[in-house]
Image 1 (spheres, helix red, strand yellow):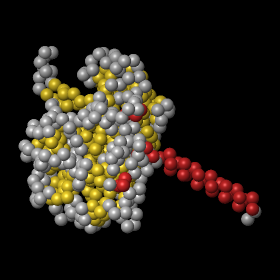
Image 2 (cartoon, helix red, strand yellow; image 1 turned 120 degrees about the horizontal axis):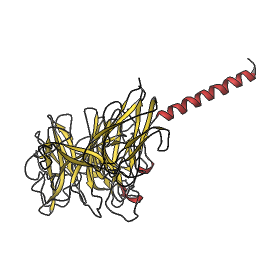
Image 3 (cartoon, one colour; image 1 turned 90 degrees about the vertical axis):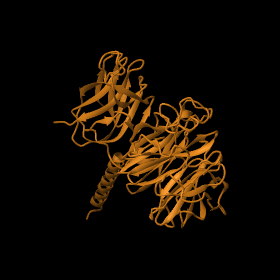
Image 4 (cartoon, helix red, strand yellow; image 1 turned 180 degrees about the vertical axis):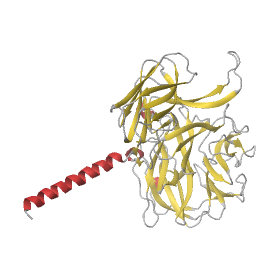
Length: 476
């Protein structure tokens, strides 16, 4: 064969390979940290149930300087990048006061676990001025959760009794680990999950040969993989990284293996939560990235992050870079042809989420009976937006309908793939001043197919409107 023909064929082959690789890269969607932007969230406690990730969190108030925390929140995802806000599921302050015995503040790091068709939420808070751990129960992972025993599960007037993690072994025995600023404690739980099955013990962790930044501080998390047991924790304050140990038994002894993530000066704290989902392992924690967009002074207004976690052949964990250098590959797509809550998003700027009680109004001055609690996107101003990632438009687009409650009115621009990308259409929202009257608006769209990111970009003046849900219509 002529050498020039061989050369041309080789060039053509390389071009084809490059174009194929580019196409693959364009269709891989990556999530970015922090994963929640509409509220300050911390202390991630992920749980996998019915092919969904349930992410239980603590919640820093918008004006927090220290730890100002009154309730526990829930977010869910089926693809690890788009997260749906489900609002408050338990708390220590009215109107969400789950534990009447608690002092009414300090809703610290929780964890939820399923057993016998019930869901148990273990919650550290303050009782008689000291740390305590309560347990709440619900027949649904979405809550609401109710106090299971009417008193603390753990109360010893010990300031280190916080940050519980719960694990059920293959033989059915349940364990709870907890502790901070001191040793790590553990105890067996009875099958009812609301009482201890034995004495409280101190976990034996061997730190020989490991660096000081791996030392135990608080926030333990226990799990099992390939018949090996793992215990992770927030390490060496401050700043905190994530340290971990391994054992052949759920009660130890444990051998520290170093850090999953080293401490970093960009973040004062950390707190691990670890799961396996759709064939991958993930570690959650938090940083202060959203706070630092607006102020340099340190306050306890934290934001949850996540990263994929991998293992060596011996079971040890491959160290991760800091949250700012990590991304997550989307493990699924989003269906645009069903009703999607506006509080489902991969990223946002400017907006908040809020819940409100709806009433059946019989006459103007009578609220009537309660219908439901509605959660929606609010605090919408000009230039704010949210992104929904990896939307599968396999059947094309003809129009979109949205549910909004107008204040000053405005526009919703629907862009694809980037915030200033092609506009599919623009939906006008007329001003009415009725921020609690929900109406469905529809507008036609350009037809598009394939998997795309979608940006809902808001235009107008003042407080534009509240946004409840959206749904695309298929092309004919």
